[in-house]
Length: 265
Image (cartoon, rainbow, N blue to C red; front, side, top):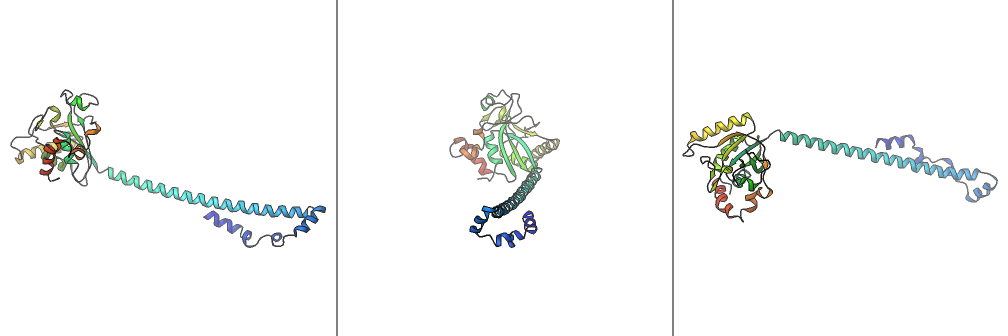
């Protein structure tokens, strides 16, 4: 808009005060007559056309400049919005932490942790074995060394790692070795994979506190191990209970009672 204002400041007379030859245009018959003996009529006509051509070009240029300024302002504004949003997202991400835990079938632990306030994401997968990118079929052979786990991303401003562990202790039986109910095998072992020295210390302290509380008649056999590569499980394992609770008898017999016990249903 600055360019438009400057344009009309420089050339105000183009609209307010047209040139004199436009106020008193020559009679067309006279122009024809004079044109026979002089170029004055022709020159006048050309001047008129040139004037209007120049005026149109200047107006077009001013309009284009205004559009360019407006477009640039819009781009700058959008860029500012994107930058602000990016900063906000980066700020939020600083509060996120990951916990990786295994407590039997990952369908069960996933169903529970997905309902917890402060939990941002839960992904079922495998950890702790020696086979690269294992499949569920390989896990079931009990030879890969992996445990079925869930990787929990949570917001530390809403829930702590210790509180995640408190729910973990209630969501499975930590006193049975390589077994949860009818599910048997090393892939069903109770395990906490720590991602930092702080998580390791908190996990060990939490386990000791659990034993001291007498919540279970036997001491916890839960392993506290350093996290290794997390292999995401096949797509059909993700959100399993939510998508299959009315279809799969395992969900109705095993998971639903646990969800009700913990107050999630």
